[in-house]
Amino acid sequence: MGVLLFLSFVIAGSEVAFFSLSYKDIQVLKTKRHVPLQRIVQLLENPKKLLTSMLIANSFINICIILIANILIDHLFVFDAAQYPGLEFLVKVVVVTLLLLFFGEILPKVMATQNNIRFAQDFGLIIQTVYFLFSNMSGLMVKYTNLIEKKLAQKNAGSSYSMEELDHAIELTSNEPHKDNEKKILKGIVKFGNISVKQIMKTRLDVHAINETLDFNGVLDSIKEFSYSRFPVYKDDLDTVVGMIHTKDVIPHLTELTSFPWQSLMRPAYFVHEQKMIEDLLKEFQLKRIHFAVVVDEFGGTSGIITLEDILEEIVGDIKDEFDEEESTIKKIDAYHYMVEGKTAIIDLCNYIDLPATTFDSVKGESDTMAGLFLELAGEFPSLQQVVKFQSYSFTVLEIQKNRIHKIQMIITPTIPSTFDHA
Image 1 (tube, rainbow, N blue to C red):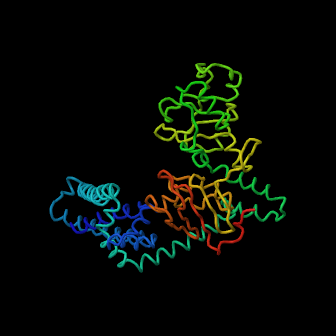
Image 2: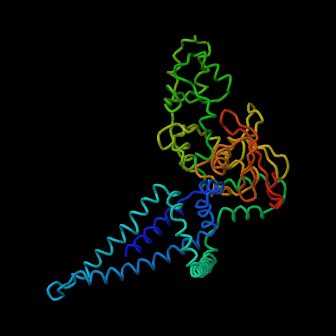
Image 3: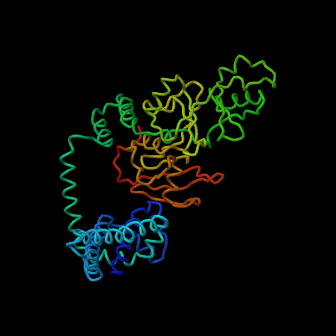
């Protein structure tokens, strides 16, 4: 009985431990030479079969626990069925339920959640044995499950379309060169409803803000240097934004002395959460007639800023006025080689080379920039010339500045279809 409870404990905990490992965790484990850690990687090469083996084994074990508990209770207790009808059944249900809940669910899953890698490492050999014993049965069940899944997918195929399918449909509409801009706008509209503020905002490292203690000449110098129409104003640090100042409000006071109390010109700042969808934010901008918002994270700290122009560019592409300098964070070398700045948004890169917006979703984690994507893939802060790969994409660090990845080279293998070429 004790052995069975232990096995139930191990399998239930391992289910959580193995399948809570992130892509980054697995990439880090692949670099290790320790046998128990390599065992984890090997088992996760076929996750469906592994999970099915665990579930089959745990089902057999739980059935055995129920049968043995039933026999033990019969030997240990004598129930008067005439005087207490149903008591025997109630006792057995309560005892078995408590045993299975505590040793087969609560305790192992709490422990595995607290330290998933350690749990998977300690009990990996047992799980490998379970995988081997039930390999044939689980393989058969996975095969039939896949068949059912395909049947259901075919049945529902006509009722919904993925973004990739819509992108492909747009590509097939026309091959005329003058239609390219229309295609880009249509693709932007398709993707628009699935883009969050965090994906397109200007991060705090690239935000030029004004300290509220600055004198008026300092404010004018900032406006001249950066030529922005709006600036966030902060107190102490950027996490404490107290308002914003509009350049057009400053223009009538250009002749004022340096002691001029420019703070009186400030307008209230509009704050949005980084997970808000830009489709909703656009409606708010229209309703409130504003063009600028400060983006905050879950802790209330400043993540960056977003403007109406940033949102509209997701549909119509880059908007340039007569004062904008030609600047791109992506440089195309040829059809398969690109130079990308670390601050480049992942979604901007996907748009630039005509990749589906979801291309890197499975590995980017919480990151929205190419530097963040590289860190997720590497699992550590990289060194110069370090290379990471994902599917048919290879990324190399070319430049690091102040502990930030500044430039990355992206290489697409030649087997990628030529539709990735940027017009």
